[in-house]
Image (cartoon, rainbow, N blue to C red):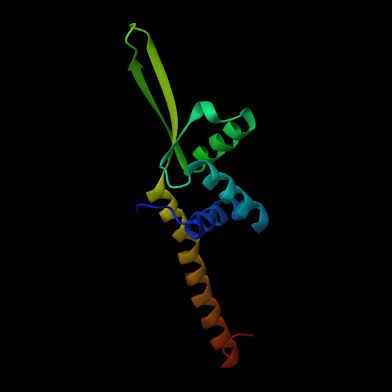
Length: 124
């Protein structure tokens, strides 16, 4: 998956945060917030984030959407410069966008079976 699509991200966020009671509107806002930073890129430099934004990124990391990466670069004068980055876990997001969908499909099949049983007078 080269480009993360908005609908895939929002579905994954809905599967994770929606199950925790977050409204659909807030999930969409969180998805747009995240895409505003990443756009078509896979990483964001940590130093561009404000403290509240960083807190949101830590929460997204805890839920599997992001990971951190650190690089150390030696400058010509010998000083070491540390670059902290946030990276999208695209494969994990793709996986998270499908998890609940599969569970919902299984639940729908059971509901159909029970409805069929009720229609045939098998259940009370």
